[in-house]
Length: 189
Image (tube, rainbow, N blue to C red; front, side, top):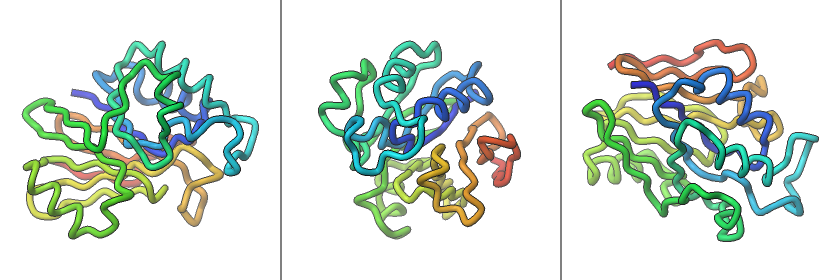
């Protein structure tokens, strides 16, 4: 099993392309925890030459690796018109290699207690969220909680402006620095 995980791409096409080419090219699946395109080119958060939601949608539509996307608070119905991949609301569920994986953007689950409750309800082995633009990888009880961070150097909440994605394999989860490739968080099963 090899599953790529990303979130909060916010229309940054080249950064998503880099992540897929660098880490996910031969993955079985890519899970996206929302805020994919982010309301088109008139969004006031637009920064940098890489902001291209239409190119990102075309890239996702043409991807040989299937995407499973949970809707984020920045994903509009207009975005769904250009994405051929359904954006699932509010949870995406995947069963892979005997593990129950639940994906939710996280904007309506602000505390760990909120996340713990939903993870328990779904008996999630892995519970993935986004929204905070900061990576998290920790085990609480029988669930691993993962936030892959963001691919955007303009939106990251890391003090060092690190951008990141995650990779789930049979024996571990790694959070990877998108630019250096360094695995700076690792949890083994």
